[in-house]
Length: 29
Image 1: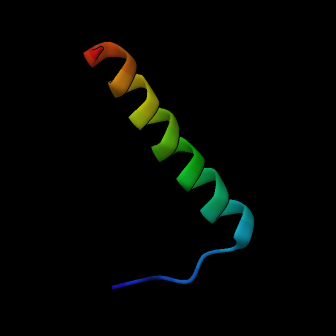
Image 2 (image 1 turned 135 degrees about the horizontal axis):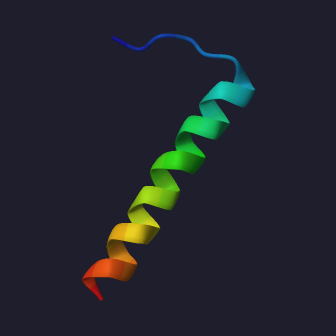
Image 3 (image 1 turned 90 degrees about the vertical axis):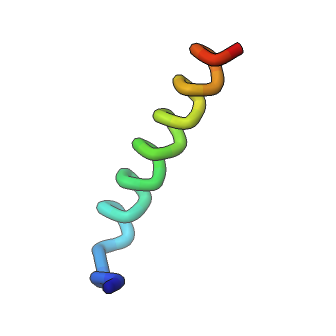
């Protein structure tokens, strides 16, 4: 189920996920 979020909250959430992926990539390298 997709819950509508304010643009700022969605951007912050996506930014957090992106940072997590970068950290995982850096650790796995």
